[in-house]
Length: 175
Image (cartoon, rainbow, N blue to C red):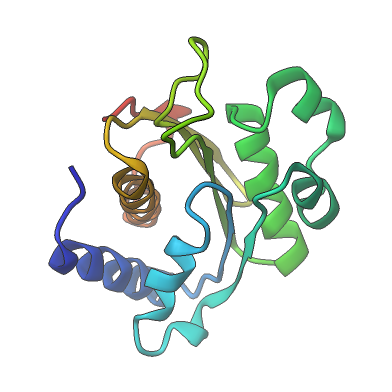
């Protein structure tokens, strides 16, 4: 289930405080969350100190054009994959020259799932100059809940990294 509004505000504010403390900037590339993460980040007063921008790359062509996702990756792995999520995060980081790039790609539902890639499957990637992390989640909510859970998970990953989380490579399989 999605968390309450109070926690959402806490996650976005905590992300901002940690980015400010490190002197880092953030760029976001969103697909299935449709701009929700950027919306939450910009609800924090002073977010312009660290937030550079957000690209909602919903269409496959937009992922290629604006985020430099390789067409071969899309063909081989599909838009909802760890590989494409990582390329999206790297692409937004490069395009905006941000210290950290985050991306989210998934199947929010209610349709679009397959046995291999069910509704609720989401990949969240985070890329900095020294690390690349990907989380895989399968949420079991409705479309709105899946989007909210994905945004929460992206902000939690960002906080975890900024607070010095160990590099585990791939984290999570929540939901």
